[in-house]
Amino acid sequence: MYNYFISLLLLVVLSSSCQQKNIKGAVDVPNNTTAIFPVNNFIQTDINDVLATPYSIYKLTTKKPAERKDSIAVSRETFKLLANQFLQKTIATPTLRPYYRETVFHDLSTKSITITYSTVNHELNVQQVLILLDDATNKLKRVFILCTTNNKDSSITEQYNWKAGKSFQINRFIKRKEGNDTEEYNTVVWNEKSDN
Image 1 (cartoon, rainbow, N blue to C red):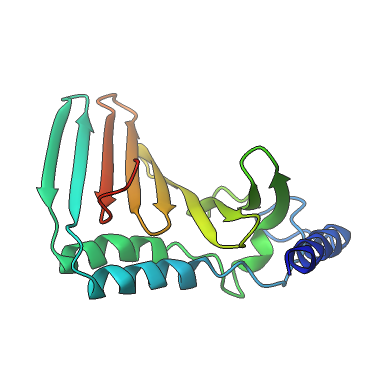
Image 2 (cartoon, rainbow, N blue to C red):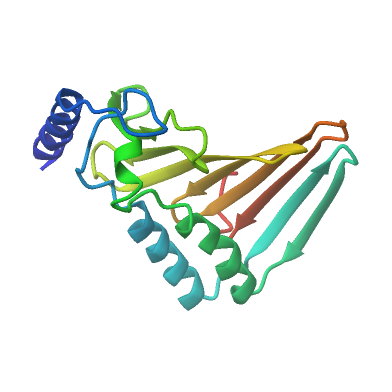
């Protein structure tokens, strides 16, 4: 099964690299219509598990430059609202798929298969999605999503990190033209054994 999965991933990468097409607003992005790895399915499974299991859910927040730290218990409703932000960052739509290049890397040191989707179109909110799979089981280990938004007076960078079965992070960095930059780090944990 493992060899089949690796062969399939390599076939996808090779076929996508052979099909080049310029897309309006992007440079040298493959005209790739192959399916995106179903990240949302795995995240939704974790969300459903948390909503159905009596975990203690809490959120840790750090804000800078004030260096304010806070830790609060989180209701299931709040957890769902926060977690749904990950589902909203999907790139697996027919209109968005051609803007993302897929690369696959097998990291023997971490025993992970890394699948990366990245774009050169800076107008898109989601700039990169990085997925780590366990190379023995093909189970999701982590998902990293990098988003950027540029406004007239500021730029916002958001980093989303989902650790399967344990926790997630949503970090925001706001850079303003007049200064007064801010950073906010949010970690939501529902499994007491989390090593975050």
